[in-house]
Amino acid sequence: MTTIPLADLKAQYASIKDEVNSAIQSVIDETAFVKGRFVKAFEESFAEKNGARHCIGVANGTDAIYIALRAFGIGRGDEVITTAFSWISTAETIQQAGATPVFVDIHPDYYTIDPSKIEEKITERTKAIIPVHLYGQPADMKPIVAVARAHGLKIIEDSAQAHFAEYNGQKVGTFGDAATFSFYPGKNLGAYGDGGAVITDDDGLAETIRRIANHGALGKHDHEIGGVNSRLDGIQAAVLSVKLQYIDEWNRRRNEIGNRYNDALAGVGDLVTPKIHPAAEHIFHVYTVRTEKRDALKEVLSEEGISTGIHYPVALPFLPPFTDLGYTGEQLPVAFDYQDKILSLPMYPELTSTQIERVTSAIALFYEQE
Image (tube, rainbow, N blue to C red):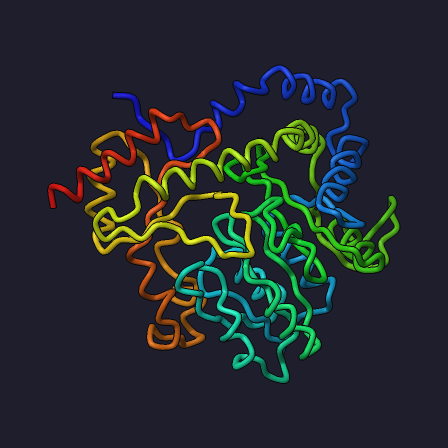
């Protein structure tokens, strides 16, 4: 029995192998390993495709958030509002900057931050909001932007899981003051190692971000501020430039697979399939369902050679780094409830109709035998 992986990076590589190998060889031939023309070319292409003025490549998506926070001068004594449900990078970077994360519960249908619950968390110490475009679904940006502007808050869009997803026909990452991206290999646009970027339309902010990411310098020995060492390397940039040519096609395929799953799994047992916000174009970084029988279903699928994942098993406020903030399940009831019920099914553009049928049939059979 052939295993169906949660994601299949080998299948994607096979489809673009010659182009990727050639791009990597070009970097090696020119020894353009740090900075250089390959990084510059990717930054320009990624900015243009997003409709942004600037893209600054950095070492990873976590650094991207931290550097953006630092560029806004956010630090000790400040508060940053964010979602209770995301990967740890979203919140740990706030602590790294010296500020305090303030968690808001998620919308019960869309898993992204609930805009109606943001304003009540704003205090005189609040400096920014970090909405997360989770699972490939854009956060509900219109009310988020309205609240931020009314209170003079910065918006940093965590777009690590939503490359080129759209909200009201506008690409995510272009609603706030800056947006951050991860190019971790499993992302929709993934490198062959770590990588990340920040985009912004603000010329001064872009310069500050570029300085912070490069030891505080724009040129050699031009250290005007204290920074960090966080640069996108040439090989990763070259790989990403190849993949950038295919990302729209891959995202369309992910959306098609997500809708096929939704149709096939509608009304099956107690399974709750993803709901798509009416203003959103979902690109399904992951396909996540919800069920009271999560652990049993996960075990049965594993026995059938179907890989699954949990994104995420513990909501952020209940992870050890944040427990001293004192959040309870009663304060964040949706995130607290969902952490024990969510399950991600195989999702990648190369997933075949036969594989999709195998996954959905196994799930249907599980509920029939319950």
